[in-house]
Structures are given as C-alpha cells and as structure tokens.
Image (cartoon, rainbow, N blue to C red; front, top):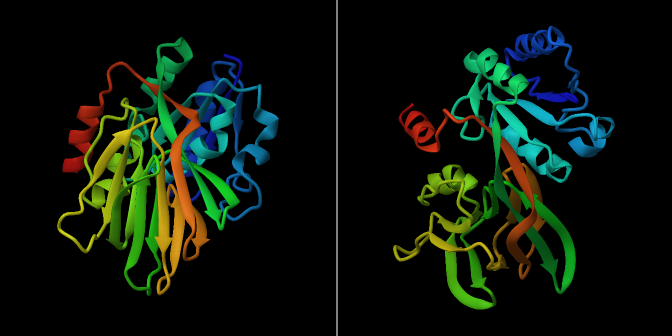
Length: 283
C-alpha cells in the first residue's frame, strides 16, 4: 500500500493504546502510517484538517479515523475533496458511521492489508447562506443542515420551499435537512424516518413543531430546499453536522442541495446496515 493516514480522537480515554496497536500492526508489515498528533486534530486550532494535514495528500490511499461519529463527520467534511476512502473505528458509544468496533480492529486491519474491502459513497449536502441577496458562506455536511432557535429564544418560524414552490411554514424549534446517512442522527431524535444510507434522497424534519400536522417530508435528491427565517423575536443559528455554526438574522435564506462532494466509507462484506441498526437501536 502507498500509505495510510490515522486520525484519532486523542480525547478518548483509550486513544493512546489504540494508536499504539494500529502503529505496531502496520510497522510489522512495513506499511507507511502517518498519524495526526493532538495539535493537528485540535478542534479549537485555526484551519481545517485538510490544511493541517496537507503534507499527507498524495501519500495516503486510505484514512483510518478512530473515535466516535463526531470525529468521522469532521474528517469527512474537511477531507471530502481528497477522494480517499475512510475507515471508521468506533471508540465512542452509539456510532452509526464507524464500520468496526475497537475489539474487532486486528481482524479487519488484516482485510485492509489484503485488499479485501470495498467502499460505499455517501451523499453530502451543501448549504448556501444568503442575506439580502448577498452570499455569506457555503457549508457542506455529511449528516445534516439544521436551522434552530437559541436556548432562550421564542418559537422560530421557518418558511420552507422546494424548487421555489412553497412547502410549509414550520413553527417550533427549527428544521433539520438530513441525508440518508444523517437520518439516524438528530433527524431520528426529532421523529424523522430511518433511511438506508445507500439511497440518495433528502429528509426534511421539523423540530418540536407547534402543529400536529407537521411531519417529516422526503424529497428527491436533485431538488433544492430553501428555508427563509422569521426570527424577529428569536436567536437563530444554522449548523452543519452539529459542529460548524453560523448565526442567522431575520429574513436570511438557506438554500440546501446535494453537494458535489461525496464521502467514501470503507465497507466489509460481512457487515450490514440492518444488523448495525438492530444492534445500535436496542443497545
């Protein structure tokens, strides 16, 4: 193999031990392993992972991300343009994105070395924030784009359109626009449907709606969702994957569509989404 990159969540209790085990495994097989140090993975540091790990580009053909779903989401967003498959190793609790658990690591790393793995592409979302016709920023997300009220503000109203056709005026705590991958995250907690991540579609789920008629809506992957904020008496924020935030004002518009970028997640033939779903939901 050309080389492998390891991005650990150093804040996990057993991170050092897991990094040591992975390092020993590839060292015995004379395979280059590049490991991100705590400064490079620091959430508070300036710049993205792509900027801090630029020296890896072209040297690695696979990324191992050891942590929980949050660590994988961050790596997926920051490094999507690298077009390198990601193997998630779960060191957290209920991880839907990680392909394997720490206890299974040695067995599946053998499969990696032997080339006995596949990858599955997951769609992402792009959100463009506009204020009075000016583009303020673009954001990508693997799980979801969320427009929600602040902790002490009043009910938020979000007027939602599909391809410029009015869909619904959602009054409540906000609106989640999720990918199939994100359907098992915040959207599920808000009452949205569980969707097989191999599909390509978009789920719109209201958060604590103040109407019994408001329900989750599934739209086609090639459609654009426009959310217009009515926040005269509310603090409002837009988040991408719950990790990147942007403060919104009354009248701001958030246009969400399928992103050009995709994420490649490593998959082994003996793992199935439905088995994972049974294990995670009941645990």
